[in-house]
Amino acid sequence: MQKQDQRLWRLMVQAVRPFPLTIASGKLLVGVSGGADSLALLHLLGQQLGANRLVVGHLNHQLRPEADEEANFVRETAASWHIPCIVKSVAVADLAKQSNLSLEAAGRLARYRFLAETAEIVNADAVVVGHHADDQAETVLLHLLRGSGSGGLRGMQAVSVVPGREQVVLLRPFLTISRTEIEAYCARHGLQYRHDASNEDVQFARNRIRHELLLLLQTYNPQIYTNLQQLAAITADEFAALQAAFSQIWPELLVDQGENWLFLDRAKFVAQRVAWQRLALRRAVQELRPFISEIGFATIELARELILAQKSGTQATLPGNLAVRVGADRLFFGAVDVGALGLVPQLVNDGAVPLPVPGKVALANGWVVEAKWADGVSAVEIQQNEELGRSFVAVSGDLWVRPFQPGERFQPLGMGGQSQKIADLLSNRKVDRDLRPLWPIVASADHPVWIVGLQMDERARVEENSLRPVQLICYRDEGV
Image 1 (cartoon, rainbow, N blue to C red):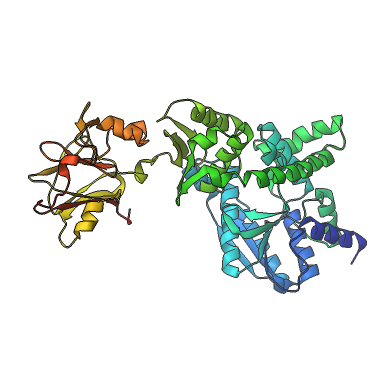
Image 2: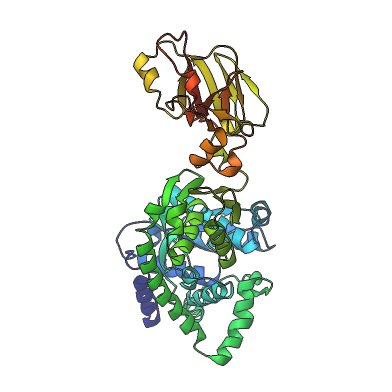
């Protein structure tokens, strides 16, 4: 092997430490576009590790007339080097429209999704891509122009995970190697790579930085590429220390989390330093939208200031069709079109609906209120009556499910007949202000019976001489 190739290999091995590129086994999925960087990466890995450890992955973005030819080139090159190859096509332009993303962002989303899925199919230990030192400098400058913090100024990482797939390792072994060195490697080995004409189009921000801004900055400082790479390395180490400290705080802030939502403790959030507040908001977006890597400072600040204001029921929009909804004691993060409504029972409208015994009333977002006879339920269980989603009541006559009326009062169980406004109960129980108007109430013709999930009325208490108690249940249909 030539000395230049030996040097490149040493730099690659050092860049992706502690991932062991040199282990005797283990499969790598190499993302290959057909350009100089990915072709050189595949060739060098093949020379050092052998074709049997590699699989090629190529995604056709369907954005250019020559895209099909490039896909065939990658397929044929892999075959000639005896390396398995998987090619897939995705209409990135359609994905951009559907997801409300730029072409660049949609392409990145599609690319990493393809690589992650393919890595799992072929049982690869890691995905390897050809981002190099010049790409790193451009990335840092791009993030700087967008007003990024330390998370953006650290640029790309040599060892990370595929966005949205924490179990798939992502390697960038060329991250300390320049484009010039890569092209020289291709020339030494007679590698005929493909040129992507879209890389010359200065309508794209990265291309404009590469072909215009960086050339201008070199007239101020010929070492601008090196200095930007050093900035990335220094910031990455400092950011790692910051994240390690924040990882001790995050569990204290996180109240609850589901597949597409999470709650943070508002009081604990407000008590944090500003830096931790910003990191908490970014972490919340990352948890729910792992593919989103760029969140503007103004967006974060608007959400943060809204949370700090002494007002509940407000909402701020975050990237990825997410919203943060400010409650009295909790912060809800979830899809804009769902909000917190799917996580608590809510009426479909402000009308009263009959609740037969036995029978059900459908609420919004799959919630149900059900009434049935409490036959076979022990007296002890009825007397305890402690579950929030269930209540045993003694009633005669018809039942209704409806909202509470302005100024309406009820007699809380165990308060000796004293009355309280239902609105005050909802406020005291920290129900968000805009969820209160459609909070379901089970009522008889004469008075409220059950403030659903919160409190039973004293007048519906089950006594020893009560005839046939009714069991009221509120639950969400798991299929919704």
